[in-house]
Image (cartoon, rainbow, N blue to C red):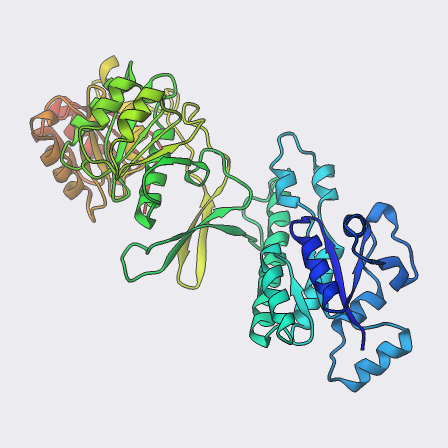
Amino acid sequence: MKKRALLSVYDKTGIVDFAKGLQALGYEIVSTGGTGAALKSEGVAVTDISDITGFPECLGGRVKTLHPKIHAGILAMRGNEEHMRELEEIGAERIDIVANNLYPFNATIQQEGVTLEQATENMDIGGPSMLRAAAKNWQDVCVIVDPYDYDEVLEGLKKGGVPKEKRFILARKVFAHTAAYDAAIAGYLNVIPPQDTLPEFLTLTYAKKQHLRYGENPHQKAAFYSEVIPVAGSIAGAEQLHGKELSFCNINDANGALETLRDMYTDRACAVAVKHANPCGAGYGETLLEAYTNAYDADPLSIYGGIVALNREVDVPTAKKLAEIFLEIIIAPSYEKQALEILTKKKNIRLLKLPGLQSGEVSASLDIKKVTGGLLVQERDTLRADENSLKTVTKRAPTAEETEQLDFAWRVVKHVKSNGVLLVKGKKTVGIGPGQTNRVGALEIAVKMAGENSRGSVMASDAFIPFDDGIKAAAAAGITAIIQTGGALRDADTIAACDEAGIAMVFTGARHFKH
């Protein structure tokens, strides 16, 4: 009985050699317009798809393989006598191998200025249908969606046939591929107005960017997946210039550093250090060296082995300062040549380049947290306080210097795990109390970290201060101004305690929980 392979691919990598290998094994090659032309030009004998269907390709190639003689030849179960009889009745023949890959939808939508019409034209219809049909009938049909698998399939055929286990793996690969393809289309269409931020059905697709040595702990397997539609300014888009590959915790902490840096200033140099997903120091200045020095001085102990994100090109003075201690990762928009030479002398440091950090912007995306059995999905917290949203609630208003410090504190405390309290003095954080089960406990940690620097500092709380005990503790530490959400039942008590201590306090009207 005639053996037949249908080859119809957009990505023609390896297809000529694959076709020649099949032909040498006695397969008739059936193909479509572009693929057929490529094969014929290399001397491969090809049967046109229209010779099988008796119907020409039409609508500019939109309709080629959508025909009963094609799909029946793929879907017919070889051990089913009724299927074989029906094939003969309609004049169709079996198709034993299908190689297909799809129109480049993902590559198209990543092009700058792409239109909806262009994206729509690159939504493959016949390809997914043919792939799914072949994958459904995997016990009788070998289906290939990835050119990487051509050689292994040929080797199997030379030995008498592709093993059943391999055909199953190839079929599984197809359904994952077509599911991701459809999810990418649904995701793209969902960001086009009118946008449905939280749709009834959430379709997500991620591609494996790299396999990781392990997860949070050595006994956990792990990998890093990136969104198929790139998120500009994200850790997934960073280029690694130096150092060993990133770990699970590296990537998570680097993401936290970038999130914090984006909420800092764009009109001045900024630096943030992160350790175990929490900021451990943040600072700004007229120069990058000043900004990094401030971030370092905020907590010289915790920054060791941490991750540093910077929003300006790394220059030589800053590189020399960075090189003084062990850092896991440095992320910056660019590096001066000599600065790079200084830093690459350190074998174990990872250097990441991420253009666009100066802008502080990131592509819109959802904030997703996995819980057992489901997902929690929300819009990203992009809210920033401005002068119009702040309300002074005490008799004393903050001074101009305190106002600037409060603004900086509020930008950074947003990225401290709740309950979070943060102290700022000058152009840097001096104490950070993250992730406590009560706010006084978080304040006590921040004050202990700050030491004498707590006197004359300002304080930010990521949510409201429920009782005046927090205010009394702040007054005892020498804190002069506070920024918090407001909205507690006992706001009057906290305001009165501030007035008694001479502390200025402003309400933002918005909280920044981070769990």
